[in-house]
Every structure is written in C-alpha cells, then in structure tokens.
Amino acid sequence: DVVMTQSPLSLPVTLGQPASISCRSSQSLVSSDGNTFLNWFHQRPGQSPRRLIYKVSNRDSGVPDRFSGSGSGTDFTLKISRVEAEDVGVYYCMQGTHWPWTFGQGTKVEIK
Amino acid sequence: EVQLVESGGGLVQPGGSLRLSCAASGFTFSSYWMSWVRQAPGKGLEWLANIKGDGSEKYYVDSMKGRFTISRDNANNSLYLQMNSLRAEDTAVYYCARPRRSISEEYWGQGTLVTVSS
Image (tube, rainbow over all chains, first blue to last red):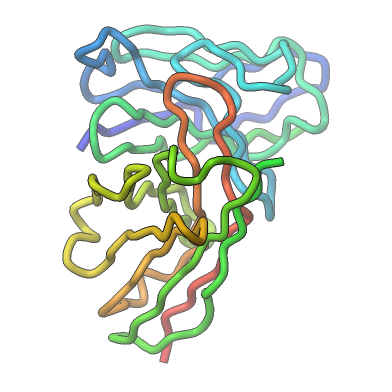
C-alpha cells in the first residue's frame, strides 16, 4: 500500500498568518493516464471530512481561495495564505491513484 | 441537493454482525461509484471499499476482505456494508461517500458509529 506521510503533525498558527502542510507518498502518484490523484481534506471536531483540493491543485466548490495545493510525483503541499479561525481542525492528504486509497496521519491545526 | 444518510450503527459484541445502510438522494445514484470510509475514535481515516454504479466492480482494502461486503440497491438508492466477525478494532465511525476523483462535487455522509464491545 502507498504510505502517505504528513508533516508537521501539529501546527500552531497565528490568525492572519500563512500556514503550510507537507505530504509525501511512498511512490509516485502519477497514474497511467497522466493524472495525479492527490487530495486534501479538512475535518472539524465532530464533523465529517470535507475535501478541499483534488488532483493536487484544484479547489472544490465553495473552498476559499486562501487554500492552495501544489506538488508533483511524491511531494505535495497545502498552503493557507492567511489563516482564519474556521480553519482549525485536522487536515489529511489522501491518494486516489493506487488501490487501496490511503490517507496521511493528519495534521492538527490550532490557533496560537 | 445531494444527501447521504448512514444508518445501522450501534453496539455489537465481538464476533457479531452488522449491516450499515446509506440512503442517497439528490442525484442519479446508479451512475456513480460509491464508497465506505471509516475513522476509529481519535484516529485517522481509512478508505474501506468502492463499488461501481452498476455493482459490477468492487474493491476492498485487504484487511476487510472476507469479512466485509459492499453492495448496493439502485432501485432504492441505497448503499450497504455487511460486516461480519466484528472485532474491537472495527469500532469506528463509518462514512458513506460519493467519490469524484477528477472533478468537484464529492460528497460524504455524517457517519454512523459502530461500537464492538462485550
């Protein structure tokens, strides 16, 4: 199975400041059709996960443009340009290229 | 509006069985792959199984093979997860999802809690 490794696992942030989460996969996430199925999810306490980003850098409907994704191959990054209070929670990267689809361990974002 | 509503969770003894259901609405159910994902208390996410729109293809994470079965009833817009030989480590919130790998509009339900304990 593809292992997804996130860092950091805990991220204290200051409101209005940028934040960045890294995700590394144990093998390339480029599929045979050339797509890279790397997603980012956000989960608030007591809520279902919500996908923010699909295929590395595409924002899902309704996701604020302060969220951006980048990367290629095995190294990926989620950036929040200016953290807002509603951004707290746990962020997961997830690969959908190789079965079984797998998630990173999660990064807990909290306000300093 | 797309809605996915899970049900069927509860307390079950080790070795027991449970069938989870997911009622789908707001879209043409038979046209979409559907999935089950779970999250143990305080832990991360685990994608368990996928089933094609017509039910002809199914994929399972290895640890579930032989114990869990994903199925669907397109006439009733319902997705199921039959879980047998349950273990304490199967205790989790189980989510139904409509995955969309290449476009937006991926949806998840609110989850149903399964507790395996004597």
